[in-house]
Image (tube, rainbow, N blue to C red):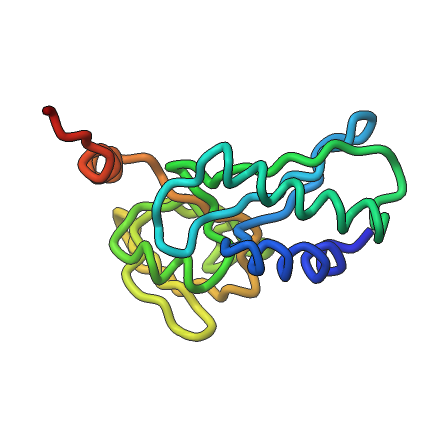
Length: 165
């Protein structure tokens, strides 16, 4: 089963439902789980109803196409506060935020980085750590996610305040 094949099947359905596909993961071996992570295009929070809606749409297609040989469970979830960054647009959206990033090959003798995104170009993300600035090609990034900082938590809380009546 190829990751790109699953993306090609899943992404159009997620998009048609009005969401963005963040990531697809297969987890486990004996009890395989297909995890589909979605986000809203307008930046508001994903609800359980959103996940259920996408899950129903995906289940129908997955039953018909049967792209996974063994039994598996489908899990549709939100990216959460420490969301993974999987596309150049995600990195652009979070310029100035702290992230953790891993590369498939060494970049300037390192494979793991923690720093703030300072710039995003067509092919690279520029990350500023405590001591240096690194230009990391998107093609080499194997994992990246936001780091939950006080600043990020405060922004989240401010966006979710409920007015007292």
